[in-house]
Length: 193
Image (cartoon, rainbow, N blue to C red; front, side, top):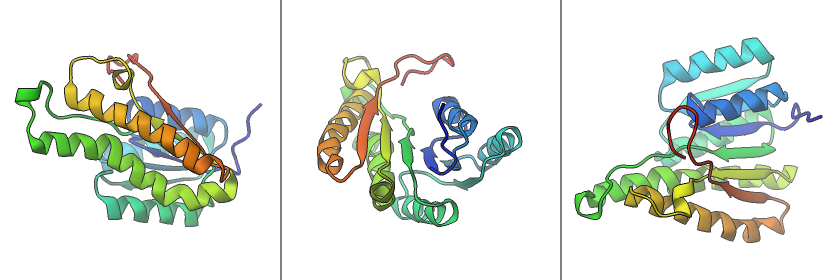
């Protein structure tokens, strides 16, 4: 029997897919939620559904995780409103480009920003709170990060995320913060993660 009512959780990319499913599960266990995604209408609609169904406090902000200052401000504000985070789920992912010769430097920068920098920015901002609660971070990677598949920028940046999680589990583990990466594979909505 899990009770997360005193352990707020931050979920990025929470308006659909795996992020929304994660938010639904956490809300069912009573977790106060800080949810962010790019589409404000969809994010607020889903947050309203979760509030109505589960009665949990939810703080939302529409943002893009590649906007470092905006993401860090959201994490800080959510902590002030909901209390220190017991967990963070860095779920946002995406890619531009595919094959080497078809992938520009801008495609690489975008994909690295979405898949790695956004997760690191959110985790860096939440780390002081996670230290105080003995919390955990879950970095949503992909099976493509450990098993090469078409989509060079996506797989390479998810491999980087896996490596970052391994390093951070050592760096922060001694301070009481657990860090793990998960590679879900194919999802029921047809997306690969």
